[in-house]
Structures are given as structure tokens and as C-alpha cells.
Amino acid sequence: MPISAEQLALSRTLRKNGVFEDATAHRIRRKENIILLLACGDGAHILDVVEFQNTLWEQIDNDNPPVIQTVTPNGGVAVLDPLWPLHKRLPGGLENVWYYTLSGMILKGARMIVGQPHFPCGQARLSDVEPVDLLTASVRGKLHFKHKLKHEPNFLTWVLDIMNDKGKLANDRYEFAKTLPQDHNFGLYPHVDYNGSGKGEDAGKRTYFMSAEKFLRFVGNKPIEF
Ligand SMILES: [Zn+2]
Image (tube, rainbow, N blue to C red; front, side, top):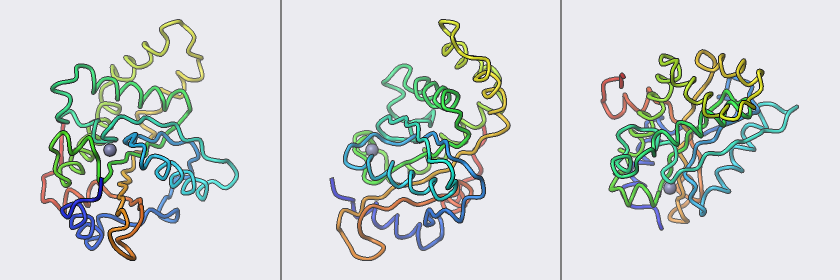
């Protein structure tokens, strides 16, 4: 599936306005080597996505090779959005992605979530989600998840209780989990496959960093609150 004219135009505009920034190691202040990657499982791109993240985080912590735990629902990080269209038809879809994201962090000891939307995305197309709305859903999903983790203690307890169904969750996992509400990061890294459609900046597969604040300012939205 080639990138659409609309997706290409939006990517160019976001680059020009500094909303899509090159995802380079020098921008990352926090030394992390355990990453929870929440990305679309699209088989045409996922290898590039994981390899890029592996190289990026390798540069952050040269002493420890990255550990990248992946959660890959079709649609990627946008599936965290409570308003994602599929949730109306798929009971438990949102709760599933909450569970696998947070339990993956607890299992591996990850404090860093890398959330990835991508163009072109087959699931977004099926769900009739416009390119700019895919990014809005990604921002909303990120903010909603962070809000739940920080301000709803029952959210963490719900995940821990499921993980400990057989009484086998170690104490150190509990201790780690308790620190997560106040000590985690969630970055958005959109991926674009230009599919040989252009040259220079418009060629190949690219991963960007996108600040939620910059994106919301760009689209003129009020801050999203819950
Ligand atoms: Zn996709």
C-alpha cells in the first residue's frame, strides 16, 4: 500500500513546522535500555521499526544492549485512544492493550514507552481514520494512559492482580510496579514509509519524534483532559 498524497502532504507540513523531528539520540535526556514498544504489527514495517529503535537506544546506553518488549495491535499506539473506532465493535480491545502494555513494562522492568503510529496504516484505512486523526488518537491515547497510571491506583492493581493469578509474581516486580506511576516516560515516534515515492527527505522509511504539545498546538486543539 503506497503512501497517500494526503499522508505525504501532512508529513511534509509536520516536518516543516518542527512537529515531526528527526529521532536522534542526542535529543533523549534519559538513559534507558529497556523499552516497551507499542507499534502496529504491520509485517511490511515492523522489522524496520524495531531495528531503528534498537539502534537508537543502543546509542543512549552503550554499556547495555537494548531490551525491546513489543506490543503490536494493528493501529499501534492509536489503539490506546478510548475513542478509537474499533473499540465500539471489539469488546475488551482497549482493556487488552492496557493490560499488555503495562504488564509488559512490569515484566521487563521498562520505564520507557515508545508509542508508534504509522503511515500508511491498513487498520487506520479500514477504520476510515484520516492521517491527522491517527496522530490525534495517538496523542489522546498517550495522555489517557498516563492519566490512568498516575491518578487511578486501581488501574495498576487491576493489572497486578491478573499477572498474579497463580500467585507467582515476584515481590521485586511489585516494588518496581509501585514506582511506575511517578516514574515513567512515554514518547511518540511516528513512522512513515515514503515507499520510494520521492527523493531526499521523502524517500525510504523514516522514524520521527513527535512532541504531543507541539502537535496539539499545530492542530489548534485545547489540551486534552480526562
Ligand atoms: Zn498499521
